Length: 302
Image (cartoon, rainbow, N blue to C red):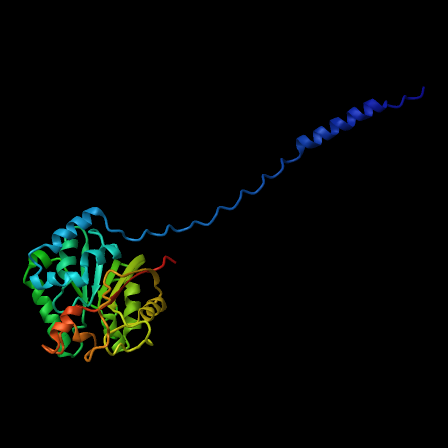
């Protein structure tokens, strides 16, 4: 007897069963690749900002007995409270002052302000330079510190002067570098680029450089040698930018519109130098100290 052919329905069931078996034995599909993680972005440190406690301490320091009447009389021209606040000084920072001078005018302010919670480093002249001016200044400054160890005993003294002393501190160890009325000196001996690069190296990424100097007439061509002690503000910014800094802000805190910048002996005609002695002293006293730019730069976070 002939065998009957399977029905169409039965064939469909067999095919379905085979398909199910094949699926059961096949490996599961691979999971889709996880999305790649976004590269980590380094947090940019906030600029130092002066807090209320620091301002209160600064007021006490500025009124302290360590400051002579002559030093206090210059506050009207140098504006130490406003200038340091603009730069973002804080009691817990490590601050490097470049060329504090033989008398240490700002040392009298910064050393006691930073003594307990921060660190003040005075980067002066290179003791190996054979110059009576520098050697006398180094001795005078050290005598000042030695005269009041309770106040100045924690000051760290180092040197920053091209070409022989360009690493005053370990690289990347300082929060704030400040220098007052010194850039013109570095222009005169062509050391400004090296000095600014050394300050850049000293700062932590995100650290601040604060510069104050005698401001030249912006209507006149820049004098790269600053023969009369005045520095073109845009030229100063260009020098700092070439060293790697970014300009954050400028301030008119230390401006003096009475300064005509046309004196026989340059900026040194004015107080506090009085290079002409008593000649026209009343005229120069009425002008006061020089017109100054106040610039705040930042070391970028790379």
